[in-house]
Amino acid sequence: MTEQMKKQIDEIFHLWQNGVCPGGQVLIRQGGQFVYDRCFGYADIENRLPVTDDSVFHVASVSKQLTVFAVLLLQEDGLLDIDKDVREYIPELIRFDEPVTVRNLINNDSGIRDIWTLEMARGVRIDDTITQKDAITIIANQTQLNFPPETQYMYSNSNFVLLAEIAEKVSGKSLNDFLRERVFGPLGMTSTVIRDRYWQRIDNRARSFWDNGTEYFHSVLNYGSYGSTSLHTTAHDFMKWMDNYKNPKVCKKETIDIMMTVPKLKGGAETSYAGGLMIGELDGHRYFKHGGADAAFRSIIVGLPDDDIELVILSNTQNTPTDPAAMAVLRILLGLEAPKRAEIETVENFDQSAAAGVYYADLPDAITLDVVEEGGKLFLVETFDKAPLTHVRGNLYQVGHLDEYLLLGPDAPAIIMGESSIKLQKADASPVPSEHLLRYEGRYESSEIETAYEVTERDGGLYLYHFRNGESRLYPIAHDRFVTDGQRSTFVQFTRGSGGAVIGLTFSYGRVQNLPFSKVD
Image (cartoon, rainbow, N blue to C red):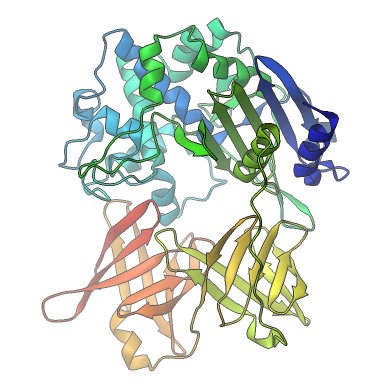
């Protein structure tokens, strides 16, 4: 790697070099040699502790591949069969009727609803203390799936929580103990552990900090749930695990092959999700990868087997999206041209008074953005305070110093992040005659997530209230269909009985589709 290439890679992580700021570890191995090894920023900005090689990061969903590997090791041992129904191993946790195999969990085509989306719907916050018992209890309450198994791919953290439960029940050991004996210890991963209790102390652990474009906020994470998340490691430690993919030391080659094989759905379609890994190509270069995001922690690992390249990026802030960063790094290493950004068309002579309001994306993953105007300036409402919007030109605004932009106003609004963009629509906040809204008023309960919401009409608007999530306005987007504002973006579809009366509603948000609530008064 040339010095020029190193400088280009450094620039990708320029926000991690801005004084006392959060940052991360970036480690690249090419041809079996480390060619780039850098630590950026601070593991704890409150106590001025820099990131070092020994800093331990929560890697979120990067954890999933180790959970899958534990189950596959048990299959090597002849103790389970991944093509058997999960009821063979954890019947006490299954209430839905459809047969779901262990392999369906591994490949994310089970249809089981996502644990974190369910938890948020019932009022659990990301910074609440969440135990493994909390997670399995709500999964075990599910009587319906998002879709029949093997008919769709949909990412669900619940799959990997259940895999962890299977591994523990079959092995008779905690997942952490099993992996320490069979993987971490033999591979010399001395700084790697699964944090399976939220009160567990881990030496040299980095804390996460959210960057809103102008300041940093401590983004608390109290997970004690695992399987889908909670692996803690360093870049150098994880690279030892990456080596096991090309030179298997603690498993059979057939086990690695299973992890690298994407399934075919019923009907013949092929997904991109294999065994805790995403499989794809970058301009013809095959890769496997997986990212992670919890609180402000961000991580990604990528391997290019044909090019003998491995990359690990671990971070304690969200201001540099790791997937695009990894692809940019790989393009430099492979001598590939960076994709040209499309020219952003703006509305000239834009009237800023048309900018404030709620914007949403009518996609399976509900996205809502709330833009407010205060003192003649625009702000994006976030979990932590409000992020200032800097006017670029026309109706184009930048979110603080981040590589994130908004096209505002009613004409073709969008959110632009790096090379990707998502078209938005501006919600109609016009008052609606009360007689059209009163039919929706009432209390709605869900037995599956054991919670209730109140729907009320006020001043020509419809509002959704939960005792923990607070109040959100419902904006109409189709007949009986609304989208919420706020941080927990959700599509709400009211359901009617044979006489036309409203009898319930469903929530849909990405990894949970059509979660039913019954109207009780």
